[in-house]
Length: 181
Length: 202
Figure (cartoon, rainbow over the protein chains, first blue to last red):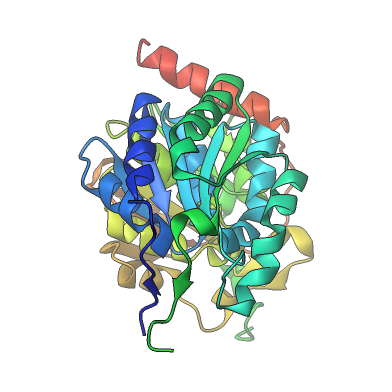
């Protein structure tokens, strides 16, 4: 059964804004493990022939991919959901030690309205894990804030060679549910 | 001597010689060397700014190679790693199979052991065939070699044929003197980029 999203009040224009910001910062590689919350942004990136999209089997591949991209002179971003943070932790050591500018946009699970209790442990702790790994973190609660937050974090990451994560709140992206349940 | 794990003590190919051969007159070749012995082997062939030797990130060597190959489509990228490191990142072969980078070649120096941690046998000492996994992942040019006579044609293929390419090289299980690359990740990263960008004139 495919999980479906409830309709949100605001149209998902935040995805278009994020896509635009990626372009304005010269990001050319976009890797992802799919998430319903990211699906529109993933589609926008896939439809953009100036971006190379790479679907991963696990999120940690995206951390290594970003390292290779940077070695080769390209900027990249990893799209994942909060559960993916746990899969990346050892690989984060590499980008920290090598000071690879690393940018990730994370859709949150395990927040208000979550239907799947297995999402709670990573959802509730993703931010703490990221902090321990050396990330700078911003949360987006309202779609109108998206552009500014993503833009500032991308600047921070690529100008200062830092590790930056933007967390998109579950409330903003729309809570996932099983309709037939 | 047919006991798994003992077999590889007698394999004719020696890892340092293999890597020496692969990296001779390397010109613009970009190299990612997986953590442990492959990084020491690459360094034994001469520390080079366009080699990125790993001291961690186990399971990530092929993905680093992929990101680099996509960023530098006109340069040949060679990932040299070990069987233990490759086994930790088998999914990355699927990702390479899907992306089909023409300039990426992967070599696994397969001694069927975790060499840095006490020489415990890996899965390849038993049931696992990495080249078959690579082929089934969509890397159609995937093969295994065991003999010294196969090295020079393998080198030609890895450096000049259309990728993605995967070669499993069965090498003798042996513990060799450490030849360590610089350890500081930030230095390794910056010297690689400097050498690459200067070469490209930007």
